[in-house]
Every structure is written in C-alpha cells, then in structure tokens.
Amino acid sequence: MAPAGAVFYGVYDILKSAYIHTPEGKKRLEHVRQEGDELNAFDQLELGPLRTLLYGAIAGACSEQRIVEHGGVPALYAGLIPSLLQVLPSAAISYFVYEFMKVVMKVESTQ
Image (cartoon, rainbow, N blue to C red; front, side):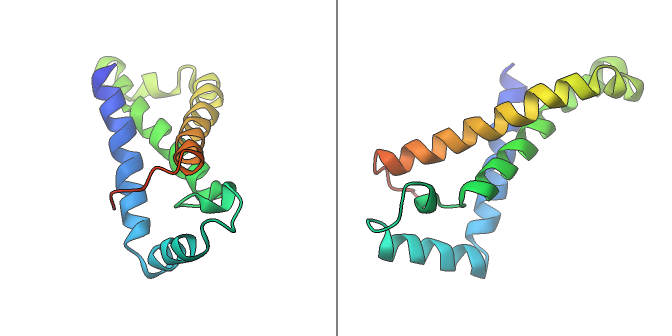
C-alpha cells in the first residue's frame, strides 16, 4: 500500500506543480489570490474543479502500475474495467475534496 500511495500522491503533486508553473497556472493563482473572497469555494480551487478531478483520476490510474510486477503485462487486463470504474472516480473525488477543504478551511498553499 505504501508504494502505491506514494505514487498516487507523487503523480498528483507533479501534475499540480507542472500546471501551477505554466503561464495559465500562474494567471489562475493570481486571479484566486486577488478575488479569493468574492469567488465561490469551487472557483477558489488552485487547479479548478475539472482539472482537480482529472489530475486525481490520472494519479489513481498511475498508482495501479504495481500489477505488472506480479502478473506481467497480461495481468493488466484482468479486471481492468471494474478496477478503473472504482479507482478513477475515487481518486478524482479524493483530490477534489482535499483541494475543496483547503479552500473552505482557508489553508494557504506553500507553492
């Protein structure tokens, strides 16, 4: 569980950092800082609601890579659909709630 969890959070953090350092990400952060109190909680998310969900889903999918180590490439396809149906929404919602609660609780980002 620990290696998969590390991959899960690591991938999300890499995606988030990469976006925040783009011109679009910097513009969004500046907009949130300037108009933060006037924006609703969803609009105060650093990545925005859709990007937060998308990056969370990608991180969840990447954390499932350990299967190859134990069963080889064919094992990737055994139960793939049920796994994705469970992991992708779960990961996306987890990150969305995490980022949303940071806004609600007024926790400032270190980036």
